[in-house]
Image (cartoon, rainbow, N blue to C red):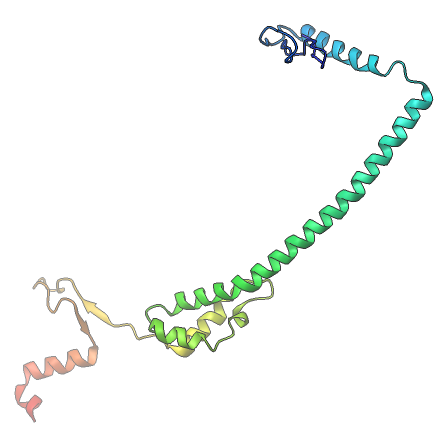
Length: 197
């Protein structure tokens, strides 16, 4: 199970390249088999460089060091260029989409309180960047203050939908009850002469 080279020799997997035939790969049966395969491979690699003189080895090491230094220098330039491009894209995206995020937050806070077309007209004159914090997130307190300023919080009105407390069934289900109106209706019902006067 040795590695096959361009000459059609067998590889570590027991397969051969296009120039030779080989059996399908089978896993080593034991650790000893694996160790033997690794040692064979290392021996073949060492044999490639046995005929080099010490000067040739030193020259190859120097060239390899120069190549590594050049690769590192060029990678640094490439990485710096990539980082600059990523930062430009991030800045452009934030400049474009963060105000839109603030607008969406304002629309969500004003939902049901301000008609959509009126809110759209109002937002045409608003600098939504003022609703962003220093780190670019939407400031919820500024959004709430703005929406409360253009559309005050409506008063809570209760509706009577269930049966009365006395078990008499539903009385005026779904009708909005205002205490003053309810009192006036009861007075008119009990004292019709006073209601007409």
